[in-house]
Length: 344
Image (cartoon, rainbow, N blue to C red; front, side, top):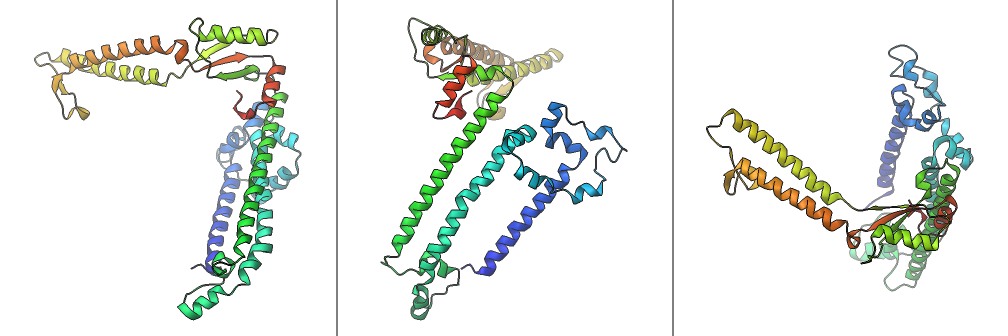
């Protein structure tokens, strides 16, 4: 049974940790050794040089200027008042999106809190259900419980207030998330459009290419885009998921290393062939000649690699292809896609 004191203690602990993390961030941000971590964009643009090349040996790693510690929060009002294009140019798109997340929290929770305190709290507080329960059944409660739904009597019409407000809170949250998603997606598209042209800006990822018995995937994709976008299509590259192949190759390398090890060991002492068990960690299972066993395993894995290569490059097994457009068509596709953040 929580009380106002319990909530105050919990809030105090959270505030204490928040202040501690803020101070740790401010301290680490001011140290020369972390300068590249906190200002990477400035280094890329050549606007900032490493302070580790200046000053004494101690000042290369620790900031000894006490005035910088006094002004450690000056960047907060500057970041909040900075126009969005300038903030993106100054600190990157991630920083602008991070501020949008904070604004999203305010947009969601401030109206919800105001509605809850102006409607739900009076509805709950003006009942005497808990007081009657204390008198009849000796039920213990606190002032916090009087703010909750437990203070409404069974079968009361006041429950409709909670149902309506639950729908209102859910609708407002979903609406705000949808609008914020569109805002972030638009920010990303404008950021990509304003950057220097790169190959990935001319690329669209095409998934689930249907198999054709008469054409390879590359030929099928090329034929489709040459017919529908003859003036903008450039080329395509077929890609597949090769994780299984990587596992087979790594396992084969491991087996080869063990084979080399046992062959060297046997060459130094040929009086007895090295033996092992085929079970877990060589502790159980059938006892076999380890050199013959590893050689057989390598041959088996080599066959599996060849089989994988021959069966996974057929059109039916290929899952995606990359197609290149000019930037105008790529922008059009991004703007009209329901999920533009999935466009490569």
